[in-house]
Length: 321
Image (cartoon, rainbow, N blue to C red):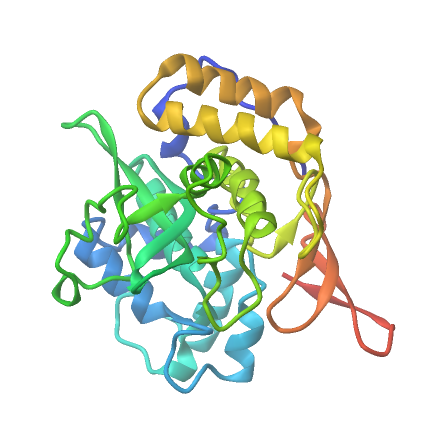
């Protein structure tokens, strides 16, 4: 499976249909039975997925291995195996799946697309979890026909715990959601060294190389290619790898076009589509490298939907995802 470019003439309607990653397979009826308002989506995704890092006490070993399921169909396979039936019935932890913000948001997007509601995932950094720190995060944008705009919401959040609207996130502010492109431009303008942008202040995963990868990954998600946060391809730098001029220039162009397109500039939107179409460094091919938080590194075949993991014993093991 490769991810073809979109024609520049396509409109918001491209996001009303499933991508390869959100296609539910035999579970489409389960998604059609779910509510599509923001509150219902929040209850659904938090009932079905426990965050592998944020859940108090952690998740079980079976749930931990769920985090490398990149296709919604594979996630729904696991959930249906653990307990058949409607997805909005409350589940105990052992019957849920493990995942992260990407999975909460992509599942919400899958529900919306199943109902022909335009929706997409966006990658960036949230300033509302830890004061003074921007955690890497994935949120949902759903098209507001009445307002003629993309409205961002965070399906992980319950409104009661926050003093801002979780169904219309503040943008770019110190306590709001900053896209990867916005964070990159702030860095290139000398406003931040990005040491406070990453997985968390207790981890080494932060800084320019980390945000650079998110700029490219956000473009992929914007193009309906919603891979895992730890999948890597093309011009992405390896963790800790120094960014050369070519990679810096590429991220500058992508970030500038993304910000202008987000502001509603149709020319920038078309240029972003054209850049995705012509520059192979931006698009995953059949194979991507997967650096799983489980501690495994492997090569994922996006056509065969398998990952060959390189274990500590150097013996490769295959896992269907």
